[in-house]
Image (cartoon, rainbow, N blue to C red; front, top):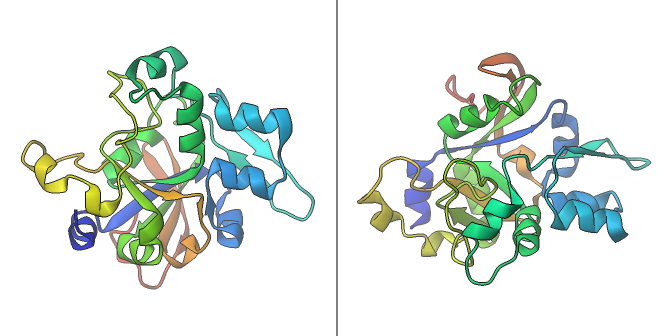
Length: 229
């Protein structure tokens, strides 16, 4: 896949964060679970539990001098199903460590709404970022991976996953997959560790609950009327 194909097919990216996350994201950027654990000084057994095992609930982090942060739960994962669909000799622990080392974005508004309406999240407000793909890709192209599946879920017919699930932009088989499917060709765009300058690429921030936008929190002057989840 070329960068031109990526930004043309998916001009916007979407990220769901916990309610009230925007001030911390502006200050520190969008951070993976591992990056948050680094920033908040979490180590030892607690770090192993949060980083290498399934998190059934979201976890709040606090550190003096920092705004509070939340590491999201991994409710869509099931260890026994994950073990069945892993390939290349990978273990669930290794898969969780991989997921936690990266920041994730959806490439379609349909995907973000599907997540927002999920039973685990629909009753609580969420913060949704709408992001300019071309700017983020230009700034972080060397750290970007693409995936053809929801790598953080094993619900509803879990797809096989292994060493080839995450591929660099140039290695992603976009044209080959296009012959078989028009939707969900690329499902996730992920960035190693964190995106410190994500605020420079955010076009709009909304507070969303269930199937409705509750509030527009912030809008970039470059945003269009359609820049919303």
